[in-house]
Length: 350
Ligand code: SAM
Ligand code: SF4
Image (cartoon, rainbow, N blue to C red; front, side, top):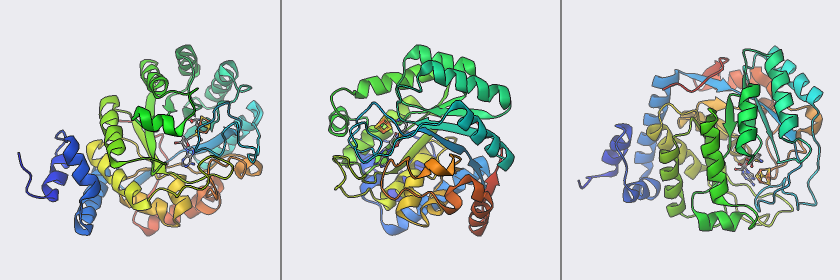
């Protein structure tokens, strides 16, 4: 069928019909300003139908800035001599959860580099301790590529969700972003293993990472269609000091927002965060993401003393409503655009 115009294409996406490669291409490159606004507004309506005007919050605990890997884009890469390293203890993490619980959080996200000291056994023990102290809360992990047995052990200890962005589906592009010790296929294998272990699984990619083309983004969209993740995290690439990509330009906010709307229409029930990377690049970045169809915010629950050290990229937003203690400020910001915080666990539901 020949489509008369892009609005028909947007409608096709809204109707849940499969989108061909060239149609994705048109959606990503050929929308007029009016068509983009129509898409954004449709995505916001779909999010509202599914979730109301409530935005789920997740308390983010950045557990370690040590990483054995060397992803070229990331400020925490092992080879970054400028990185400030720290790791939280089990007691630190439990204290963060206590604090989060007092503030009303019902999901904790433990994120960190692949730290050899925070190994699979240590993490399993920490998850078990959080589960014992907070039986009702959701526990999310984002601690990189591990073995299938470890994923099963985390799950058995009480973890519910796992975030592991595939970063890019295109293997050549993957090898431009990572050293040869890392492989796109292993990353994808980890995602399959997470699904087999019964995790609500999150994936996603950076927008505007060095060398990324529209064709790569289409590969990503098609990969997400195959994977059917429960959560999709996307954010603009932001250069990080001391990394091979320190001098590269940041990804586009507009392209990121366009993709959030496309994802919302293609995956109506998915949990999509308004990421810190967007808030870092633009003071209104997070609000604009909510108005484009995102429905999750992850305020920072890490101890204040380490927040500036978890420096994935330069000038990472940490103050004001980015921090869990300023939850009232976040509520006000959301109220100003007609939204509010939803304190529920916010599990994936079809
Ligand atoms: N180590 C774990 C992993 O890689 O999955 C979790 C921590 S890692 C810092 C979390 C995410 O940060 C990565 O999946 C990547 O997409 C994102 N990230 C890393 N460097 C970035 C940069 N320079 N700009 C934007 N996002 C970045
Ligand atoms: Fe390590 Fe994750 Fe950063 Fe890669 S993106 S260097 S795995 S923390």
